[in-house]
Image (cartoon, rainbow, N blue to C red):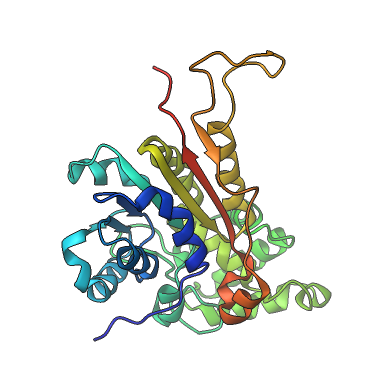
Length: 319
């Protein structure tokens, strides 16, 4: 079966941001969220001397991207891992430092398109939502059927930023007593009934925030990102870059905080001269977060919520 393809979000801009770090022969990019391999394919095509380490927690993504990227097999290493396992993944390949790391966060187009994964609220499917469906972790159905009302409220409020978290949690607990949740259509129906009509008419699909919250909880997405960002920044060589695309404010907030911390001087602001060795070890490549153009959003609707940030290492950490 041929690997399906999707146009990656901000493809040209991402490759241009990575370019200064990948122009030398032997440069190594870690594509920490390989997915279907669109960004990696573009990098390997543009930079014939570059090597890519493709990391993904989803074994199906690795299989499909491996088919797509077969022409580049001699410059590609595929690793089944979460991106917070980056240090171990690189150590296993004998790499201490790399030249670039790319994160394209959130759920992939492939995962949304496979209805049996349970990520898409537009299709009735089992409530799974595990990005690695071979992992022995709780599914979305497990969360809905076992968390108490307070726990469900926390998940919906913190990870989904859902205004009606308490009402939804109460309704879930009530309805699961009648029958446990196992299909997405029943959950979507409950959300339509629970969220007030005026709120349903604004802010997109009424299930959007709840599905986001469940997906983040099942996959520990924010915890994984919180651990992965320092690991990625630590492994970058001087002149190397980290590029991150996030799709909601919770992710972007973590990225912004991690980047600001590495670009901050180690001396007080009122000191007239920064002593040698105390300068920031990194610099921001993008001013704030970049967004997709109206044309890109029209061509690729997934780009509507993207926030892109990039950072470059300019010197080694102080000893």
